[in-house]
Structure formats: C-alpha cells, structure tokens
Length: 106
Image (cartoon, rainbow, N blue to C red):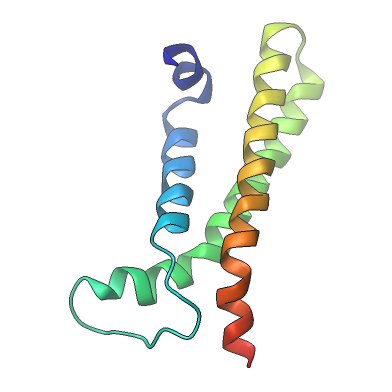
C-alpha cells in the first residue's frame, strides 16, 4: 500500500480522492439546488466540478500514456498502472454521474 501511494505521488492522490468524494456525495437525479448550508457542497459544487474532474482524469491519463512510451522498465509499469487506475475510475465516474446529468435534460 505504501508503495502504491508513493508511486501515485501527492497530486495524483488528491485528484483520485476528490473524484471518489464526488462519487460518494453525488446528489440524486432531480435534486433541487440549495444555496445555503452544507447542502451547497453536494447540490451545487459537486455537479459543477464533476465535468472538470473527469477532464482532469483524462488529461492525467493522456500524460501517463505519453510518459509510458518515453520510459522503460519499472517507470513504464508505473505509468501503465496510473493509466489503468485513471481509466477505470473515469468509467465508474461516468456510470455514477450519467443519470444525474440525464435528468437535467428532461
């Protein structure tokens, strides 16, 4: 576990934790916006930042793929692992958030 955290590095860990928090606290589809109190976090901020977080995951995936082609050995395996984690989390992120954004169009 310590090796995994070391391989991911701090900025990537913060990105992955933020995405996981966004998945956990996602509001239900059709939830009304709340402009006061702690509900602002889940009803207003998370839906606004979720597309940005998805783009950051994809950007990090692109960079990891680029670096994996430029390195060899252990570093190449590290970047391939990062790429897989980002893409798996992106897929889960889309599956979780899609119903919310689809409800906005109805």
